[in-house]
Image (cartoon, rainbow, N blue to C red; front, side, top):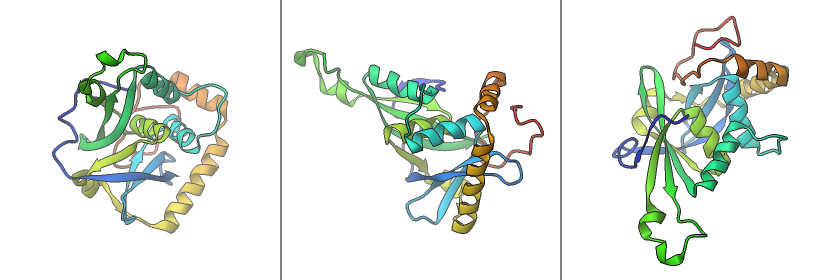
Length: 215
């Protein structure tokens, strides 16, 4: 998921940002690709991000917060963050490059509870780290940790569409029907045969006749 680690202070800083909420997941009628919808506080603009089936399941599992027999990859990531005394402060989707959304995780390094009091310093409790991430992974982590999701205003302005509540409801119902049709075995095959992960474009991909094929 992560491609770089740096002390905070570059990506997502210095511009006007908008706090976004996950309005739901929908299904692209033409390509049958899942979409996660991020909506601004006014409720009038939303940004669709095309994702794949596995990413949709991971985000949905985090939203529903329902018990699962075995942890998904993002549940494992949350456990690793806790083990490393890292807290996900927020997610920032800060750019669109080559038709692909770019995001970062803003993490706070907390002092360990087992660390002697004299060794705890303000720097340890306030140090922020920045990790590059795909938006779908960042959103999946944010919904699990109840962390905020932010987007630069210029990205919202470029990629947002007006909210159509009636159309959104139908798209989300279609997505639920789609999930009901996907068997666990088919999803496992999809994960096993996927050789590379797809970044999230901000416009719809062309319909793919092979549902297991990834660009």
